[in-house]
Length: 214
Image (cartoon, rainbow, N blue to C red; front, top):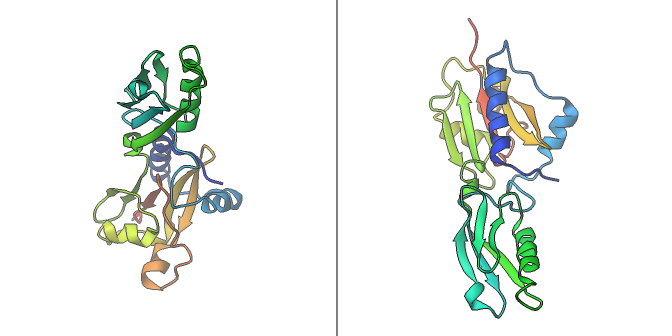
C-alpha cells in the first residue's frame, strides 16, 4: 500500500530532516514503521493521482463538444466549467471531479457522461522530486525516476565529502502521514559492496548524510 504525497507531506519531510540533523545524532524509526515504509511502491508516488494547482486537465463531455474544454487548475484550486461555473478541483482525483461535473450538468443535459484527463502534472513538480543533503559534495534535488537507488543519488551528488559519517546516513520517507527515518549504511555500500541498504528511492524521499563531530 502506498501513501499519497502532497506538498504538505514534502514540507513535513524537510522539517524532519532539519530537526534531526540539528540534534546530537539521527534517530531511526521503529522497525515496524521502517518495514511499512520500505514496502511502499517506489515506481510512483501515489495510488491515484490527486489534482493540484497548475495541473492542466482536459474535460470532455460526450456528444457535447461545446462543453469540452482544456483548462488549468487555478492557484485557488478551482476550474471554470461552462453552465456550472467554478468547481473545486484540488484534492480530488480526475474520477471524482468528473463525477461532480456530471452531477452539476444533470440540470442541463440528460445523462451527461464526463471524462477528465490530466494533460500536465504541474502540481507534482516538487513533491515528486528526491533529494540528498548533508555531507555530500553537492546537495541536489532531482526528478524521481523509477528504479533509482540510494547509491545513484550519492553518485549524482558528487559522492560524500571527507567529513561524512557514512554509516549513520538516513533516508526520510513519508508513510501514512508519518516521516519515517530509515538507516542507510553508505560506507558498507560504497566500500564493502554490501548493498542491503541500497534502497530504491520513492518520490519525495530525502537522503541525509551527517558529518562527523570532532
